[in-house]
Length: 342
Image 1 (cartoon, helix red, strand yellow):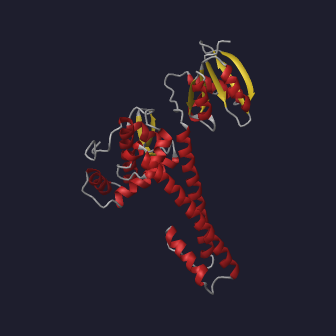
Image 2 (image 1 turned 90 degrees about the vertical axis):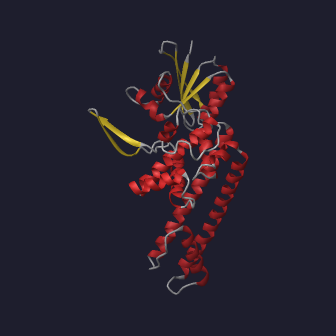
Image 3 (image 1 turned 90 degrees about the horizontal axis):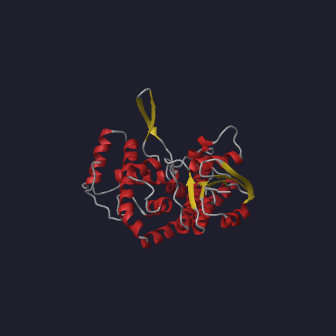
């Protein structure tokens, strides 16, 4: 067998493989237990190894690089159109191999172990923040059912919860007071764990040159800088800043037919976590930055006057993403006067 491209449909236990020759014909099919996959790849002659960018793909991709293969990772969204007839694991492996041969296909860069570790840190933080939000919402619901309304904001809720559990009130039964005390204890533990992760992220950002340059951009702090480096590395997989903004879903979605183009809301493609961080960072530039004389804040103030504040926040996030791409790929520091009107 002369396998030029090997498509692998990764499964939790079983992987389906499909090999193509130089003409694109399927010359090999096989199913392997996942724990046997690396041994198989180690003995396989050098070829293109194509996979969807899913769990474990980056680890296998680094193994392929060590053994002379050329790994190509793709978004599952781009592979789906190549699946023929009925969908099954064997057809998926064949579609992955065929998609990897297309000259216009976009590939996902292989992440290093350091990037994956940093990404795992952000995933753990996101889970804790989500748990904290659910806990606060549940506590608000309990209090609302008893006629107690708490003001908006996490810190306001925490103060009110401490007051209710320490001072007590005749309007709450002992059972609900005990439950609120348990909530306050759990909330304090989550806050401690989130603060510990934030401190670790800040410590890592101080020692990384790329993150330090990114943090010079208005609205970009250690969280955004570290999450961006973990996701895109040096940003070399994007040919221009506009591509990074599009990957983050910060551009309008197009519906074009009959030669007429219609732009609707942002596409929301790509990394949801990063997009959320960039929009939060953009809001700080729009509302919280004290110095309103810099070129970028003057641009933001003019934008707020012309459009809705939420539209302005997305536009600001788009600009921040483009600036971040330039800082990463060119290795230069942020210049406040460069391309402000672009």
